[in-house]
Image (cartoon, rainbow, N blue to C red):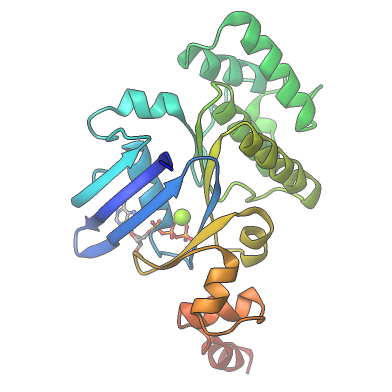
Length: 257
Ligand SMILES: Nc1ncnc2c1ncn2[C@@H]1O[C@H](COP(=O)(O)OP(=O)(O)OP(=O)(O)O)[C@@H](O)[C@H]1O
Ligand SMILES: [Mg+2]
C-alpha cells in the first residue's frame, strides 16, 4: 500500500555560523498522524520546524512537505500548513477578532466561512466575549490560543506547532489535545514539539527523540521502550537514557548544596 507522506527529510542539515543546529536528519512522517518532536533545549526542534515552513534555508539536504520543497514553493507549503511558532508575535494594536479576520483574509478564507470558523473557535477556546479587546491586554495563554486559532482558520492539512501547550492551563491544554484528536480523524497531520515527556506520551502516535540536531530514535513509544532496552520502564527514564542525560542528578545535587 502506498502511504502518503506529510513530511520527508533527507540528510537535512542547518548551520548557524559554527553551530550545527540540525545535523543530517532523515525522517518521514505519514499523513494523519500526531507526531511529536521531543528533545532537550537547543536540540534543533524549532530550527527543523522553521525549515518545514521555508523560514530557514537548509545548509544541505532536502525537505519536502506534502511533496513540496518549501524553498521552491513557499506559498504552496504555507497554504497546506498551519504554523504556530514558539513565541508567536501577534499585533498588539489589534483586537483578537481583528487579528483573526486579518489572518483569514490573508489565507483567502471566504467571508461566511471566516465568520463561522472564528466564532466557533473562540467559543471552543473559551474566549467568546473577549474578542473585541486589544491583544495587548491578553494574558500569555490567551495569546497562545489566538495564535492556535489563527493557524487553523484556513483548514490546513498539516499543523506545525512549536510547543503549542506553552502557557496553557490544564483545561485549555485538554481542549487543544481533544481538538488535535478530532482533526486527526479528519485526516490532518500534526507535528509538534515539546520537551515535556508526559505531553508527548499523552498525545502522540509517534515521536522522534532529538538530541544535538540529530534524531536518536523515532517510532511509537512501545518501539522506543524496546530499542532503549528498557521495556516496561517509564518514559522519563527512557528519555534520559536515550539522550544520555541521566547524570543530571549529580548536577542537581551540586546546585542544591
Ligand atoms: N537564528 C539563529 N542564529 C544562531 N543560532 C541559532 C539560531 N536559531 C537556532 N540557533 C541555534 O541552533 C541550536 C538549536 O536551536 P533550536 O531553537 O532549534 O532548539 P530547540 O530544540 O527548539 O530548543 P528549545 O527546546 O529550547 O526550544 C541552538 O544551539 C541555537 O542556539
Ligand atoms: Mg524551540
